Length: 141
Ligand SMILES: [Zn+2]
Image (tube, rainbow, N blue to C red; front, side):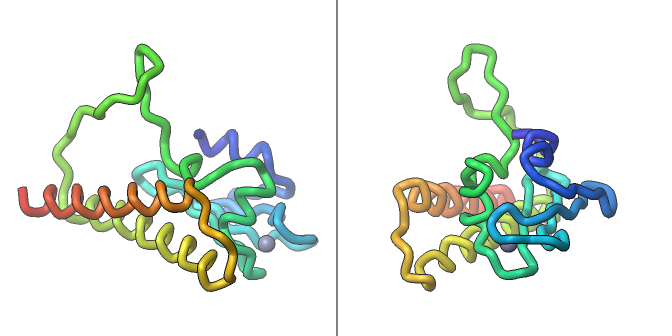
């Protein structure tokens, strides 16, 4: 989804830099904007509530899930397809994997909070594992 679609679901949005925003967190009674929103160079949206809300709770509050934090795949026929692979360097691989690591940490938080993992969580972890493998293949050439 686009960053604009996310921002219009939030209140008190203020841009603080290039690809960086703050907003009132929809997951708790937030009078002072404590939700940080960052769009990485790869179009991945990173959310962080400084009051301590889990990202999954923030997403639930605006009817989104982790998949919505990633840029959409464009398809002419409406079906998912394998994107054209452009060459990318180790820095880009590490940037993407750092976002994956954050996702894994967020899902670990669900486990630590003794909340049930959903099939979507499991699917997202599987995607993260595939992305780590793909990143390794990129670095190995
Ligand atoms: Zn919060």
